[in-house]
Image 1 (cartoon, rainbow, N blue to C red):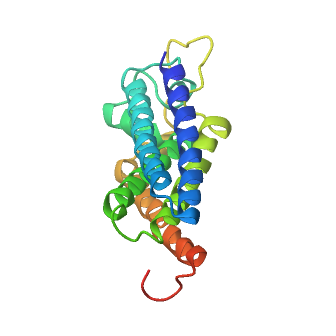
Image 2 (tube, rainbow, N blue to C red):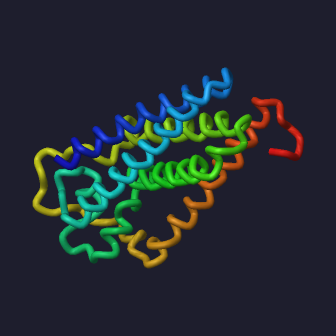
Length: 203
């Protein structure tokens, strides 16, 4: 059940991100506030769905749900509680979902802070951020899906890579990804300024 719920939520989030990027761009081009508002709602929906995916994967680790391939590869019955938490982002698939969640969080902050101002740049910046999110959601659903089902379900998992069983794994990837994904915000507004022709100091 968890694999299907997670993959379904990721696919819906991908659709919303693509829709939001397109409507924000068209809204910025044509000056139609209704389209920008639709993109904002899409961004909120993406954040909710990616948060659901992240929480679902965390639950799968805590519950030792070895029907999820990613869980079976990165934890086992002897894994301590805190390494089951860090195991969520202990390999590629989990890192992508953590990265995508942080992007969604930054996009949510941009929506909440700028929806009433910066009307010329905001739609384009929102389009860029949703477009970047759509790319990572595409990776999450096709290239590195964290919710692939494992058949048959093993009695125990393989366990986390011993090199990753370090207390630094609790904070280091989170802090690193917060910095990397945060750069999407100035990138989006810089690109929006170029698209809108606002290359002065105002942006």
